[in-house]
Image (cartoon, rainbow over all chains, first blue to last red; front, top):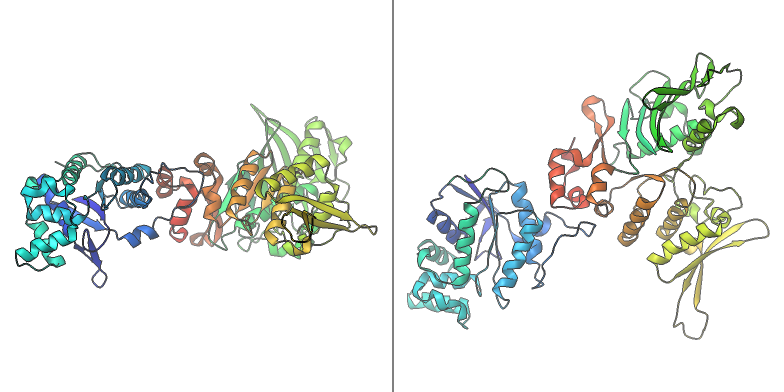
Amino acid sequence: MIEIIISGEGNSDVGKKDYLTNQFIPGPITILTDKIIRFFDKDDVNYQFKSRLELKRYPMTLKGKKKRFKNAATGKGHSDLAYKLGCLAKENKAHVAVLMRDARKNQFLSVYNEIKSGFIAATFENGVPAVPVPESEAWLVCCLEPKESGQIENCKTDMKKLLENKLIKRRLPHTNDRWRDIADNCMIELIEAPSFKQYKNDLEQKMNYPAASGRGIKR
Amino acid sequence: MITKFHIDNFKSLVNFSMPCHALTCLIGMNNTGKSTILQAIDFVGCIASGNVSQWLKDRAWKIKEIKSQFKRQYKITFKLHFILQDNNYVWEGTLKLHSLNCDTERIVQIGSEEDILLEVAKGSYTFSSGLKKSIDFNYEGSILASLKEQVLNDELRDIKKFLQSVKTLELLDPLLLRKRARTTEEDIGIEGEKLSAFLYNLPQKKQKAIYQHIHHLFEHFENYHIKAKRSGWKELWIIEKVSGVPGTFFPFLNTEAKHISDGFLRMLAIFSQLQTNYAVLLFDEIEDGLNHEVMEYLLDVMLKSPQQIYFTTHSPMILNFLEDEVAQNSVILVYKDYKAGGQTKTVRFFDIPQIKDKLEYMGPGEIFANVNLKQLP
């Protein structure tokens, strides 16, 4: 069983926890992640979801003598969250940790490197940044229009509106369930968006890398 | 420096042993025995000084109250391993609680062979020279406290001085720190009540060191001043440098100790004790009233101090200001073993397997803050 610990920005990307049943309801990014993992012939996967609030609560970080390398280029605290997710991944014996953050107006590399530095600070080697450019909806647009995916990151249109328009054209509802369906039916091997390809490559590399917990992942 | 402390039959400490370091930091849940450990070390220091009854009187305790409830025997045994001038020694003894003196006692130098420097047994004491004398006088605590300096050799004199130089600040009371004092003793008193007189009597060099520490933390701190009254009372005043006060050119603000904050006075008391000749200092809940910037600096000063320092704390911040290497040795978790009748036990915090691994990526205080002590031993 491959344990993946995953955290994102909100309900519409990685997913959410149903607090009545305590069940994780995966969002489109988790579904895409699962598709990538299955693409590499790994099918026994379990996802542990950590909300942003959970990451803020634990572990508590304090000022002190231990100076962790901190990359705070964007000032959004991505490295802190990655550090906390990395700590949780170690403690929960997860094989891979995924932190999803939209690149938005920031350069992809700033967010990507910030998240990486957080995982390094937690000494967790199997941390993977998922950084859609400019935001997670862009990857769903790619799923709908794989042929246009190579140019999506240069598109100036708001991705939420673009996705909505594409769904309206197809006479499909603009709902979270629909987004999950789009992710579920995505032909990931056709997507050319550089940020998605980077995520796919990173995941592949980490899935084949012996886990920090020492358990390793059987190929 | 004390390297290992053992005591039996003192409050919740039964057959209790603890490793000691230049800095020993005791952590643990409330009511596990952290302060009891400081009291026990101080108590053994008082045995060396021969002040057992005064020690009890200062605390308004009775002897039967410090005896453990777990044992019937009316004696407290102790063993102290210590290093003095690069030599290893052991001082061990048994304090009879009826007579408040040690009926058996040994000071041994541990080298390639054991050299018994002083032994008390069966009503007589023997020196390493073989000189044996019967005890035909009353004494309290250790016989060392009652033997005249001239009968002791240099080595025993140094040992006596070391064992008697334990100072506890577990009872520091900000209310009493503010008090005027009359005494000329070189001690701030058990509750800090003689702080002003103590500061007054400090040599200039030591006063300057205290000033430098506080000025480093508070740039507007100009100095402290002790006003000596004709009647002998000493009053503590704090002087701060100010500017921009309308209508005045006087750039200083003078405040009498009774209007100074608890934390500032505690800090002054602590820095003053770091200037003393006490070999061992004991602080209970050291973080009380201190801001984290002060804590960090204070810890750095303590780590450079030639004195051996023990403190209890509930503050993760304090621990986070320790380097990993220091924390690994110095942080001791105190807990009560309820399966063994509720006796106080200790373990090095960072020797606990699930704790040790976290030091790789978390600070010592962060681990302390993120762990549930109730789930540890």
